[in-house]
Image (cartoon, rainbow, N blue to C red):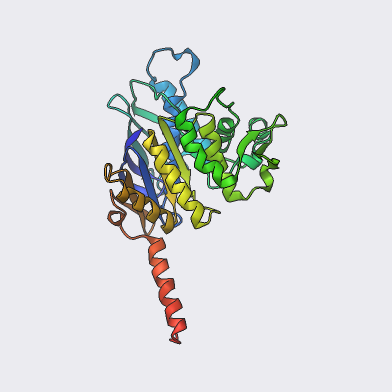
Length: 353
């Protein structure tokens, strides 16, 4: 679990502080405001601290190992020409500092690099324990249709995909639990399986299908929006998304109609209730409102969702945050929605622009 993230000179964030909630964290803002950057940074931080090297045993993460791991993850996840390209562009040499608090007081981490860094970071503070579970990152597009052979191809060739695509394909290929599904898994899967009308199966050929009473449907023939939900179902069925852990989902609303966006909101709440910390980057006013409605209906835990507005001011981004959607500052999607409604009314009334 990530509770705090402080940034100095990281990409578009000259100075920014995030205080994350235990359950659902929603980031909104215009294109280029750094939403995906925060998701990817959060992902690689936790992944680095959950990837214990084989000889480590009970030893805590060493600074020297963590420096190599963080540098590699930054390059593999963000794909810059050089690591220093991730520091805020300024005159002269600028130093980027990232400081985070993960899970408990034994897991602080602080590291830095400069605009001149090629592939090196300096770790100033290292945690004394490892994370017990790696995070899960969903890109903006689904990965089930590219799954066949992708991991081996990624490992053998230079592909224009960042590391998150390989990681999600590895998780999608994990085997299912044997025997009867546990009750928590059934509770999460049933609403999803009703949506696409069957089970998600991985064939011996290495391709994914939706299987129902009539047979199997190739995943390539399933609508892309449904394939995104099928990814969630697959990782619930393998146990990767059950219980503790962290899910980071970039634009879950992409290629989904409002009915399915409501399903996404309900699934996110169900996952969070079972202990998964969730980070969502979105442009969808509908999704944000749906999460806010579910939050207000859940009177026992009114702070189940925390909102972060990322607001551009020239070349820099300011962050506004709170436990209510209205506390996260202006919402670009709402502003455009209101302006469009005004234009429609003006046109209907014959008012000239």
